[in-house]
Image 1 (cartoon, rainbow, N blue to C red):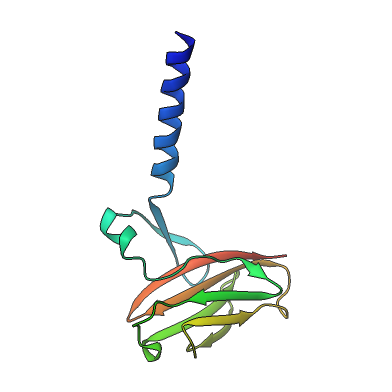
Image 2 (image 1 turned 120 degrees about the vertical axis):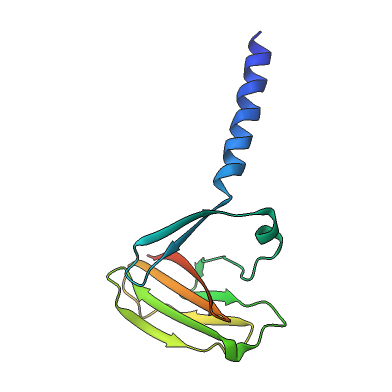
Length: 125
């Protein structure tokens, strides 16, 4: 009985964890969440960006898929108050954003590719 209950808990927990990975949040320029949507299986296989927002050695790397025209892309960085820190067009498909001069805090980076915008929140420590 205990093994059956434990197996049922493990299966339920794994399905809940999977469901948590299928939610996409969209933020406005002020950092307010404006949209919550479920990812479809189609959007999971057709991801436009590498959403890795880790800062290493004061650098944040934004990976833009090959085959995308860089002239159709824009990268904009905002602080949590909604103040634009900078805006630029990427010069390579692995654009590096320097974060050494930023104060510690929460920031939002918007990546626009062909009019489709993705927002990612990251913490500078």
